[in-house]
Length: 340
Ligand code: AQP
Image (cartoon, rainbow, N blue to C red; front, side):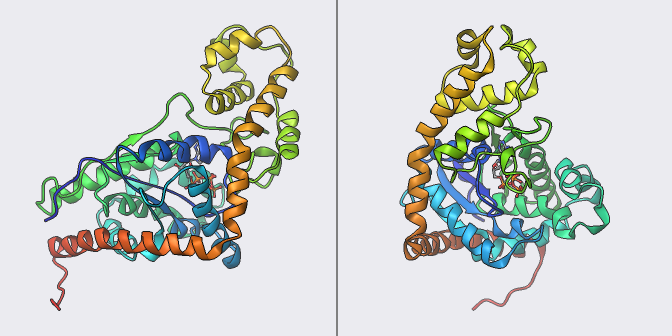
C-alpha cells in the first residue's frame, strides 16, 4: 500500500461560468500561496459542474477558462498539477466506492444540496445529492492532507473526513486514507452577493450585478461597486456595528482581501464618512489588482493549443497517482482484477 504523504494539496473549481472574486479570494489566491510548500493538484471539476444543466460547448470553453485563470492568477504548471477531473477516471471510480460507504443520513444533512436544490428537491439530479462523495474521491484519490477551500465547503470537507475514517475502519486499513485538513482563510470567509448579502456570490446567479467577474473590465467593476448595496448610515466606528450591516461588511471583506489591509485599519480610515469615497477607493483597488489577471486570462484564451497541452500534461501526472490508489482500493474492497 502506498504511504501517506503529509503535504499533498488538492482543490478545484467548477467550470460552471465566469469565475468571480469570491472564487479568487476564497480559493485561487490560497492555491497560489501553497505551491511552494505543498505537492499541489489543482483540478477543474467538470464532473461536478454537470450536476446542474450545462451547455456542452460553454462547458468546454469554461474548462479552458478555469485553466487560464489558474495560470493567470499565478499557479505555475511546472510546479503544480493542473488538469480536468473527467480526464482522470479514478475520480469517478472512487466516488462509486464512496457511494457505497457514505450513509444517506450524512448526505441529507448537507446544506449546499438544500441551497442548490431549492424548493424543487424532487427535480434535482441525483448527482447533486451525491456530489460530496465525488468531492471526497477527488481529495482522497491523491491522499491529499490539506484542502484549501472557501468557508462554504467546510461541511463537505467534514464529510470527506468521515468517509476516510469509515473506509479505513471498515476495510481494516488504518491510515490508508489520511484525514484531510481544510485550509480556510477565516479573515475572508464567504464573499457574498453584491445585491443581497444573505446569498453567497455565485457564478450561476442570474444577475450580473450580484458578482464581479474576473473578466470584468474597469468600467464594469466601477459600475457594479457603485450599484452595490450599502446602508443608509455612515461607516460605523465599531466592527460589532458593521457586522449588523452585512452588505457593508461584505464590501469591507472584499477591500481587505484585495488590498491586504486589516479591516480595523480600513474602519479607522472611513468611519463617520458616507460610502462614496470608500466605494471609489475599493473600485480603484479592484481595478488595479484585477487588471493584470484579466488581461492574462484573455491572452491565454487566444492560445487554446497551449492550454490543452497543460491539461494533457497534468492529466498524465494525475493519472499516475490516482491509478495506484484505485488499484489498492479495489484490492481492499475485494473487486477482482486480472493482472496483466
Ligand atoms: N462566494 C464565495 N466566497 C468565497 N469562496 C467561494 N467559493 C465559491 N464561491 C465563493 C470557493 O471557490 C471554490 C470553487 O467553487 P466552485 O466553483 O467549485 O463551486 P461553488 O462554491 O458552487 O461556486 P459558485 O461560484 O457558487 O458556482 P456555482 O454558481 O456554479 O455553484 C471553492 O473552494 C469555493 O469554496
